[in-house]
Image 1: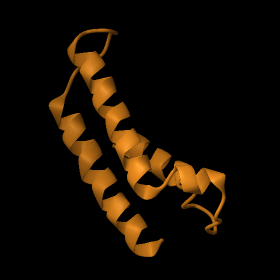
Image 2: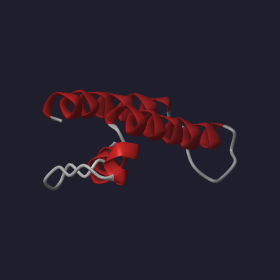
Image 3: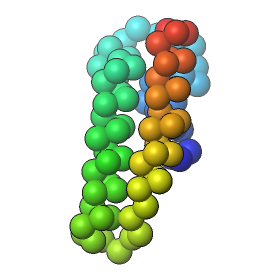
Image 4: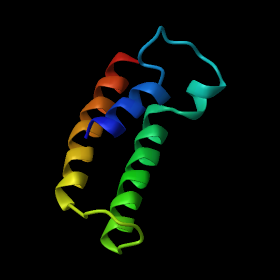
Amino acid sequence: MTGPAWNYVLFRLRFTEYAENGWTRFFSPTRTLVIFLIVAFGIEGAQYFNLYDATFDVFDLVAYVSILIPMYLVDLKTR
């Protein structure tokens, strides 16, 4: 749960003062959320289809969404 959340903070540069640049324009809040959800669902899908040795857990998807959506909403509000 904390992996995608921390990466959201890093990709959105939320740990530092806001700066308007190419990075922040590309990684807008919506685009970052969509990318992270696609990656999370892709990793869980790979686990489901046994593409690598890991344990699929549908609750991981719930956990990722339950932290990324609130972070996204806070990001929109404080942007």
